[in-house]
Amino acid sequence: MPGVSVFGAQWGDEGKGRFVDFLASEADVVVRYQGGNNAGHTIIVDGVTYTLHLLPAGLLYEGKLCVIGNGVVVDPGSLISEIELVKSKGLSVDALMISDRAHMVMPYHKLLDGISEDNAGEAQIGTTKRGIGPCYTDKAARLGLRMCDLLSDNFGSKLRSVLAQKNEILTKIYGQPPLDADSMIDEFAEYRDKLRPYICDTVRVCYDLFKSGKKMLFEGAQGMLLDIDFGTYPYVTSSHPTAGGISIGTGLPPCAVTEVVGVVKSYTTRVGKGPFVTELHDEIGERIRQKGHEYGATTGRPRRCGWLDLVIVGFAVRTSGMTSIALSRMDTLGGFDKVQVCVAYEIDGKLTRDYPASLEQLAKAKPVYKEFEGWSDDISHVRRYEDLPKSAREYIEFIESETETPVDMIGVGPERSECVVRRKYFE
Image (tube, rainbow, N blue to C red):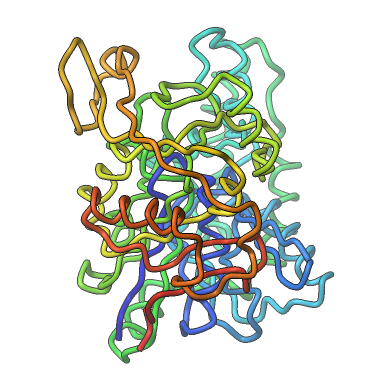
């Protein structure tokens, strides 16, 4: 059976959650493979809004197996709050599994994240200050604490050892008071009791599901231009949102993924600092922001807005092997007289369709646009591609031609049902 990956093909906030939610109805299992609670998926079902930060979107379907893979960094307190919130809305979490290899975001990670960002001045990255980067740093430095450690009788001694090093940094470098080990051990003992039923060897679980031919849906967080290797470094996250992150983040072989769906917003947005070639600093950019409600689901920060950049999307096609595009927010662009699409950059008088690694090169890049006629303001009722306005179809077909990738799903409104689907992913 197919294994379908859904990942963000821009800077995140593309609307991945609604497409994961849509496809989850046909999948047997939904697996989150990277990131932490610095990401947020907003899904609207029958007028009820669900904002999920760690829980896979499949939880909105009763009995759907949902896995938090080993590549995710888990803030136990945040996860428990999210579990309690969805339970209060009548949803079950009985089918949730958390990898025993997943690293935990600790209180000192969040504290150090905030201090480091606040002290960076003009060099701030724009982190959410939720401890994600420091957690991944400790993972690489072999100082991390994992979910299996939480269940261990030696958790207290392991925490004390790491905390001694963190308190040295807090007190001697930042002049902060040390964190108390005993109170932290007591806090995490409560987390252990609440999370124990969900923690297991998800590598074995996922492999058995794969070998038995189950329909697997892989859910990424953030977007490919926040990838630690391929993003606008250093304005990036600390993991791999690209499709290549699935094997590392789940333990499954690469052949488990047969379909790669890149979610592309019909325009471009970004939160935080870093270069943004098509950013609009005028009334059109503000109109897109207001019409699309472009404020972060996790931070509430206003998103920077600009025209669709196909240089970025082409880069995502190459780095993740995209087999199809899910195009979101076509309704947001409805009502504009003209819409534009960036097809190349001009840098030092030369045209390129490649996305540069150098921020200095990106800072000099000027967008080369192709202009299209706009389309009607309300397309939320459309369910067949043929019923979309002619100008909207021309826009979509140009994206397909430029990226050599079919647009197989089109979001025409925020509700789960407001989607044009041109093919079946799970046969």
